[in-house]
Image (cartoon, rainbow, N blue to C red):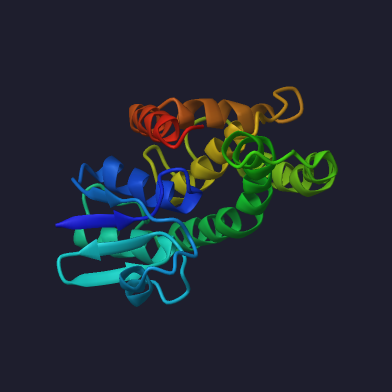
Length: 216
């Protein structure tokens, strides 16, 4: 039995769910918000963060640790490349997405979706402007420089690099953000390819249902 603890709208929970769904592995979702003081949750997530993976009698927090574990337990199809150089690059892109890219994308999600639509708070337009004018552009410039002319980031099939980047831009979409196609043609071509795969579209449909249940 596999269970993912966390809410579906979290980019890190989504990262794990996309990994499981791409691999065709059945799982259950136990909705829990980050920072929950529930004693049972804190026993498996000492930092109070989501997601946490529960696999039979084994638990592990942190999306990167979880995805690496899943790739070992369910190796077909693999999401971490076998080639050492490509694996190192995949790990770097995963870290880049999980730290700096998601910081900006999640900021838009919070200001334009979470706060006004789910928490009844006003959007801080100064924060939005800082993200759009200062934080996002260098990140988008970097991605434009590494995205290939065709195909996915590291190979013809999906890798953890694609999953990690995709979940960030899906989060930004909640904040009504899409990169400028004239300025970032390779990135936009790539995002169109990865975000329109059957697995990603199915995940977004499930998220829409979850958001509706949460009143968004």
